[in-house]
Image (cartoon, rainbow, N blue to C red; front, side, top):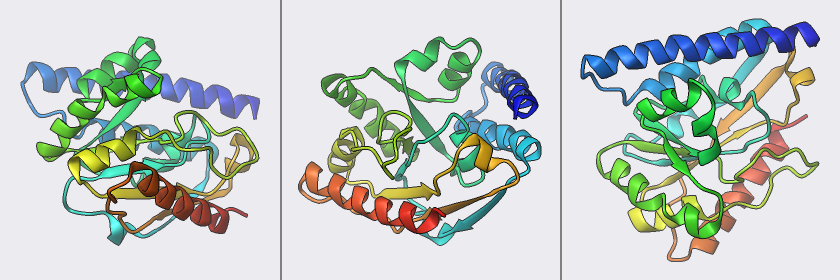
Length: 227
């Protein structure tokens, strides 16, 4: 595992540099960078899948709407980008915690890709809604990890933060849950990850009810997908 971990760290740096170079070229040529997040996710996934030699089984691709949507996924490991990279939709930007902006090269890449940074805390998190709502109105989807942090506990899912659901209520955009089976770096090696894209959930009049429906649906899916 030590060699695999070192190789994956090296590939992360290389993929960021490649993607950043491409993003800067698009920036100076004044070309659209709306698909840069997807481009980097696919680039990173390409290398990690060859290092870990894992397979991905995907169900529910037909559930991805053609209209701008809010994609929510379970967050369990630093390798989640490689796990979800094959299903990361086009014309979608990610929401990251603000601390990630200060990671060398990655922060600049994320900014150039249109990613939205949010500070921790419920009131601060709600500050992301105008930026996200504007993106949705312009035809761009949003990707959020609603647990807010990696789930290292035995629980299938952590409680959800409410930012994604306030956004859904404000924009009336559908929420599309994307679930990955439980894994660790060790189980990923030569293993199989099961991913299911669930049918869209249309927001209710209540943030709490919408979040509860999404959490319940994802918890059932993660339990079913996990060995």
